Length: 124
Image (cartoon, rainbow, N blue to C red; front, side, top):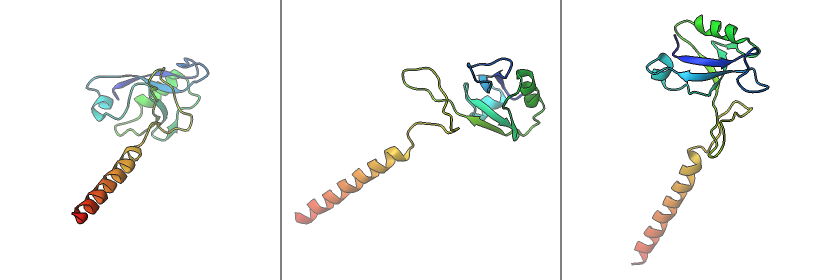
């Protein structure tokens, strides 16, 4: 198997008013666990290019069972607010601050410090 369990579908909604398919559990030492990219709570949008929208749970399970050896998943990453339940963004992109949000100001500060030190040394 692929090493994970799913929940959801038109007949077994995991979240109210949402018939999407979600990863409920990653099996330790399974394929998904060893790959490391899939996380519990992720919404699975497509399997090998096949859209999972409006599928019954058992039909989604069949798609996974027949996915073959090389499997491509399109997922929507869950967001975990600091003080709240797991939620999902509607645009399909993960949230949070990018690494650049920390690096750019840090590099600018470091460059300014180097410039000040060089100016200080020139005056001595």
